[in-house]
Image 1 (cartoon, rainbow, N blue to C red):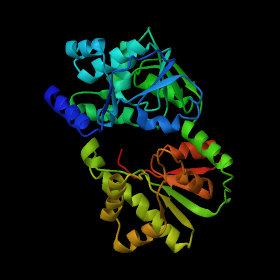
Image 2 (image 1 turned 60 degrees about the vertical axis):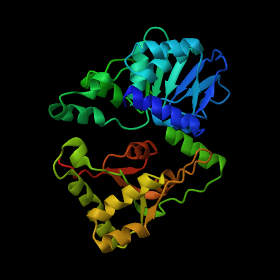
Image 3 (image 1 turned 30 degrees about the vertical axis):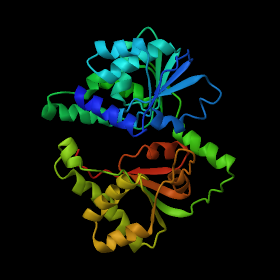
Image 4 (image 1 turned 135 degrees about the vertical axis):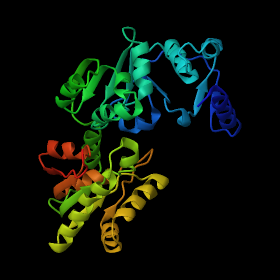
Length: 332
């Protein structure tokens, strides 16, 4: 997005009251949370902490802080990106002890971490299995660039020891990689306990976790990847139907347009009969800003076997002592 488009975008959002401007002098906070979209997953660990939330996704901006130093920093545009220059000056004013994010693959976070290296500690909490490191290497021969070169971590709170091995393999610089498990799974278990939600043991025979594959052929330059991916779903549907097994399918998306695209993708590759059976057994996650249902975790915990291609939930299910099957029919 060029400078003129950025300017027009911000002005329009201000005029339509979608962005508020604050001239209030910012005070020191111990923690800055980057990327408000993932904040709901962090609210338990940040309870009673002194923190300030800042949007890193340009389209998600709801508030802009302005004073003379911020305006001067934007004008200088030292980092070649207006929003990065804004964020850097904002962070300097707040002067936190720690910058933290749950969006651990954010390029903006990597950039901020490098700028403040040795000055302010930065911490990323692992949000998903980072298979894109391998895919970035694969794409290098097509795109003549490798996004892995953008990655950097000061402190990384990982699912397990595997991530440290992965970073070394792909030459991802980091200072500390500390295995802590899954924050989202921890939140789900906490939610089930607080709400006294009963978990029905072995209620389902098989749980499919949708990976919501969208145009892998096009995105990652892997021929017939989408077609091969959906062989997994077709085979499991047939197996469950032929053996009269109790099946549950957990969709990945709950935002309307993303959810519709996910379902359209299945419809494209399944027969009418398969698609009807698929929809009969389909459940959507019910997450919102103020309410966490963790429907997919509940269905997974109630199943004898959970199947997906590469979903992070396979690892989380193993952490619970349950059975997971990675069924990968993609030719890579």
